Image (tube, rainbow, N blue to C red; front, side):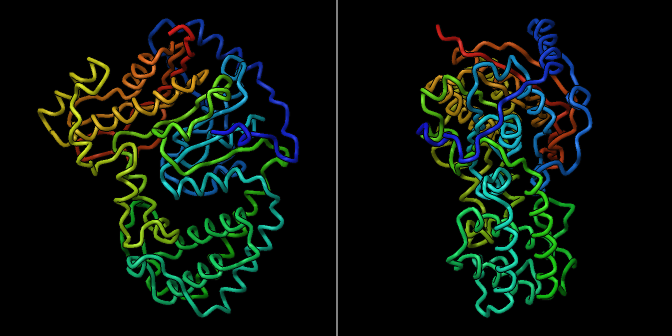
Amino acid sequence: MSSDLVSAEAVPPPTHVTSRHYSREYADLARRYSGESLDVSFRQLVGVLPANEYTHGLYPYPARLLRHIPRFLLATDAIVDGVDLVFDPFVGSGTVLLEAQLRGIASIGVEQNPVAALVSRVKVRAEEVGDAETRLDEVLAAAKRCRRPTIPSTALGRWYAPQALSALGRLLTVISEAADLSAADREVAMLCLVLTARRVATTDPRIPVPVRTQRNAAATASDVWEAWGAEATAMVAKLERLPRRRPPAHVWTGDARDLDMWPSPEEARTTLLLSSPPYGAAQKYVRSTSLEAGWLGHAPTGRTVHIEHGNIGREHLSAKDATLTTADVWSPSLRGLLEGIGRKDARRAAIYLTYFVDMQAAFTNARTTGVKRIALVTGTNSVVGSTLHTSQHLAEIVQCLGYQRTLSVRDPIRGRTLLTARRNGTPSPAEHIDVFEVNPDA
């Protein structure tokens, strides 16, 4: 990845300032760490944060990372010492990148889900907001005059009243064809469109994966125009909260297993990898954005299987995935656990085997490029009655690559529960935060 991707923008970024309080707290944890995870509450360490702070609440992406964690870490001397770039190879909805911007550090994120990638790009956008507000008003006015709806997915009709579907399609036509929209403003408009589409759909808003109800069954074009106006106003208000002087943040739609997505070796020497990796069955997050994917043109038949097939944490396994065996896993303890799961449920074992092999490939890229420091936020899951300590097994992968763990803490966060709960499992009871330092001699 070329170094010019993280060059300074026209407005100089703020100087990165750490917190003495956070640095002292971290130093105390590091002194007490002796190989076993320490219990900690990041909510207590950081304190209460506003619910809609900056652009964190821009989009209701499921299982967003608790922002207290990156806020604490990125303000800690020991974490950012010698760091010029924050890299998140599993960026999700962009929490880490926004927190890096707020701390004055350039950042890059990679995300396989195109909907989440769009959300992240808008969340950390660098352009002035004034033009975006004007452009959104112009899109609405043009859509009211337009008579050519664009419906990019054959499945969208089932989720909308006829008039609402037509109005949404006319908004899409205008956004797609407007010659005077910049790339950044077009992305803001597309995100406004999918948020509007969520608002007027006949789905149950309490359930992430679309489920049809009688809600909005008689929605009209006027309802769509009103929803667009409300979403546009809310979005612009959130974007206006961002500080003007921020370092650049770039989001690529891609695969963390692809070495080309990673910082160059020169950049990696001053790179902090800070990320919350996906779970073994993370394709549920892709399904939860299937309506949005349809409007963005990524699901022409309404199905997201083709996106899920490339996802780390997928249940739709390919023929190549089926050739994997536990011998492909580096950790002896993980091999034994997967073999035990396989005796109960071969399919679930294959899903998690594929997941850990994928994670081996992703973190091999960290070692290949020479990433300086790694901080991971992960959970523990139950799979067919067996406890799967994801944090422990990912730590083993990272350590096999020559990194030394310098801290491990556990926070009893009730996060990501709705989409990680399964009929054969339980929600993750805690988040584990592990910090690793590269061993140059390994």
